[in-house]
Amino acid sequence: MDQPFPPRDERQPRRGTRTSVRIALLASVAALALVGAFAGDIGLPHPSLAAQAETGPSLPVNVFSFADVVNRVRGAVVSIKVKMADASEANEDDSDVPGLQPGDPLERFFKKFGGQDGIPFEFHHGRPHITLAQGSGFIISADGYVVTNNHVVDNATDVTITMDDGQTTYHAKVVGTDKKTDLALLKITDGSNFPYVEFSKTTPRVGDWVIAVGNPFGLGGTVTAGIVSARGRDIGSGPYDDYLQIDAPVNRGNSGGPTFDTQGQVVGVNTAIYSPSGGSVGIGFDIPADEAQSVIDSLKTKGTVTRGWIGVEIQPVTSDIADSLGLKAEKGALIADTQPNSPAAKAGVKTGDVILGVNGESVDGPRELARKIAALGPNAEASLLVWHDGSQKTVSVKLGTLPNDQEAKAETNSGSANPGFGSFGMALAPADSVPGAGSQGVVITDVDPDGAAAQKGLKVGDVILEAGGKSVAKPSDVSNVLADAKKEGRKAVLLRVKSGDDTHFVALTINSAS
Image (cartoon, rainbow, N blue to C red; front, side, top):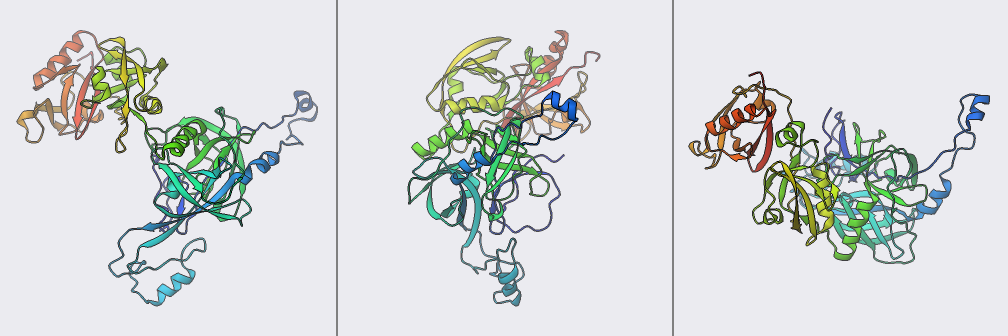
């Protein structure tokens, strides 16, 4: 199966059907509409067991209605239309359609009939392109603050809010955006006493009913319903992925729309769908209300979002890594590298340590650690439970501020090979003997594509900096560590490897029969 990834830039006209399954941001620019939805907890009555016994299996006659909830909340759900300048250079022939010269008869044809969804192509001939985007959003205060997705209003030059009646419109300004969570906060610049909804303080359960209300295809307010299919989904969009998955149908034009529970409270913000065609197939992803509330509060008060930072590269703890470090469970975040003078380095956190908990709460993996540290904010004091040299210790660290261009990196290294000692399928040389390899460690000069090293993701040019927690400078250093590990009955040895600009750990399994 194809890996989920952000969708194509939906500002460009579609050039043929895409058949690969993908994660699609629910936004549309130019001729394409954006997507979004709502979710909530709604219970359906079930016939009693006695009634079923008498009448046999059947659908309940009086099915629970969503009408009362929808009537309460739909006034706060709005359509968002955005104009944005496209700074892309004009085509060499000065036409927006490849192969057409200005004044070509086909240009007039495309102006009148071209484009999708009834929106014609625009021809600018050297001027900046003005593209259109459409999405959904919801009002969260009587004075007109509106929540939507960052990808709906990114690079906006003009924002218009259309109310549920489809007639009343207002201008809005962008208060702040956060690309890491794909959230944005707008403020309606005129008017007052707007209808609004509130974020829920509780997280829906898997199986709870949800309601989706949005503005797909520019048709006006539209309602769909479904259930919460899963929680804590990671779709690869960023280091803080923690999505609700819902099966309420989500269509283009609903990006930034809210997800309601049966009480009419927002439990999520619709952001993406998993789809082979761009249309809803019953797999939508919502930013949970608690995360959205925190980000929106920060955007409202400061116009930006600041996050806590400790300055480490982290990766998951696999079974091989856990065994090589003496851990009983495959939990925590392994420190692949610490940045110089970072909060972690100053607190004594070392490469090869595993962070198992933060402030008394356990950490299952790298993304959970990233979210917890980010949520604490800059200058906060954090107590880290760390696995160091075979035992636990507690480390106190004062968090810094996450730079805008940095994220906590979670590198995944896998492989199930069980090679014998001396048969890892790679050749080694001192790094200082190979031009460009640096002065530290042992460089991999050759890799058997069918060997254990290749299966572990190691490749020519990678530099082994440490083996079993010890610095290495020549191939024999690596050999000695592997030999000692085999004598001690260990199943794997942890290698610290530098690959390009990244540093991570690889656990090589030792075959006791060799």
